[in-house]
Every structure is written in C-alpha cells, then in structure tokens.
Amino acid sequence: MSEAPKPARKGLVFVVCAPSGTGKSTLIARLREEFDGIGFSVSYTTRQPRKGEEDGVHYHFVSREGFVAMRSRGEFCEWAEVHGNFYGTATQPVKDMLADGRDVLFDIDVQGAIQLRKTFTDGVFVFLLPPSREELLRRLEGRGTDAPDAVLKRMNNARGEMEQAENFDFWVVNDDLEKAYSELRSVYLAGKTRPALYNGILEKLLKEWD
Ligand code: ADP
Ligand code: 5GP
Image (cartoon, rainbow, N blue to C red; front, side, top):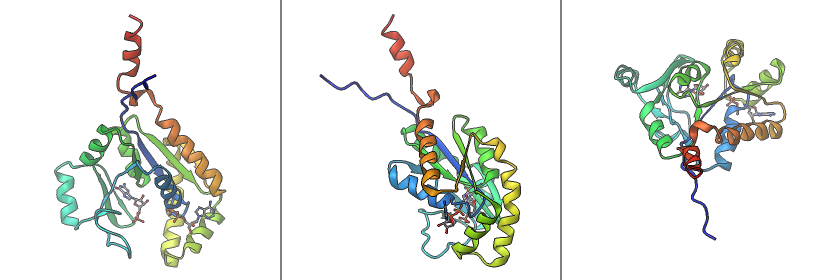
C-alpha cells in the first residue's frame, strides 16, 4: 500500500519569553537540540558580542546607525531597547522559513513578543515563570555572568515583565527542569497542529465527499 501524501503545512511561530535568569536559554537550547529542524530567528542587535558568540549565528551584530537604517526601511517586524541596546527581528527571513514549512523559534523580550503577535497572529506565545523571587535571584547569582548591579537591574525588571504575562497563550513554571521542559515541548507539539497551519487539507478532504 502506498503511503498517504503528507499534508503541506506552514511553519509555526513559537515565541518564548521570560524574566532574565528563569531558564529560557536552557530550555530553548534543549528544544533546538531535540527538534533540530526547527528554524531560529537570528536577531539583529547593537550590543557587543560576548565571548564565543558568532555573527550570523547567535545574532547579527550591527552598529546603532545600521540598526536605525534597517528600522527606518521597515525591515523589522518587532524591535525593542533592552538593557540599553537595540534588538530586532528582520521580517523577511522569518517569512521565508515559514513559507518553507519550517517552524521558527524566537528568543525575544516581552515588548517584542507583544509586537510580534500583530504580524504573526497564528503564533504560539509562551511565558516562562520562575518558581519564586528567591529562586530567580539564586539562579541569576549562581549563573555568575552578571555583576551585582546587573543582577539587581534584572530582578527589578522581572516584575514589569511578569505583569505582561497575561498577554501570553501558555505559562510554564520552571521549577523542576524536567517538568518544565516536558510542558514546553508539549505546548510546541500542540501548536504545530493549529488549523491555520494546514494548507488546504480540510478542503481537499471535503472534496472527496463531493
Ligand atoms: P535565562 O536564559 O532565562 O536568562 P538561563 O537558562 O541562563 O536563564 O538559566 C539561569 C540559570 O539557572 C543557569 O545557571 C541555569 O543552569 C539555571 N537553571 C535553569 N533552569 C533551572 C531549573 N529548573 N532549576 C535550577 N536551575 C536552573
Ligand atoms: P542578550 O543580550 O542577553 O542576548 O538578550 C537580552 C534580551 O533581549 C533577552 O530577553 C532576549 O530574549 C532579548 N532579545 C534578543 N533578541 C531580540 C529581538 O530580536 N527582539 C527583542 N524584542 N528582544 C530580543
């Protein structure tokens, strides 16, 4: 028996946001490792590369002038100033991946996610929550990448970010990492079955009943 042709499917926009230190990078890295076909939206930023970061892989590193020029040409579907630097998502590469049927994962801040919804209305927007204030502080300090004043700034920003959590479709509390990952992957897999992503499968099926 020959196999039924696979339904053509558009890619899913999958957005993950969290206050800094919650575990977003950890969970996103795991998702990308398990689902290696998933596309990643490489953002543009005006911040300096950190050790080990590669241009075009982790970010497109651009000057402030370069960023402003792209912005005024309308090339970003969202942008935001985060911790004093500009960050933005170029629309075209994302649209190309989606049209190819590739899902696209976004690691962006809360302000950006809220803007992105206007362009990608069928996206899935997930907010990760820390289990407690105390644990968030412990993770930020334990990570050892931020000076004490930066940790304080991130802790203060966390409140405003969490106040936006109501605008997201799903919440995952990152208390136990395994549990949180299992929830995040379930949300991702469920998102892939959204009706809007199927290219005409229902019409085709219904025709068979004509
Ligand atoms: P973010 O990308 O949200 O800023 P990270 O992924 O860098 O956060 O995680 C912050 C720190 O917390 C890291 O040291 C990471 O190993 C740790 N971490 C992440 N998730 C958990 C968890 N569920 N339990 C304990 N520690 C965690
Ligand atoms: P970092 O400088 O630590 O890599 O990122 C700082 C923050 O900027 C993180 O919350 C990250 O998700 C966010 N960010 C990264 N790229 C973008 C982007 O293209 N747009 C927006 N709005 N935020 C971004």
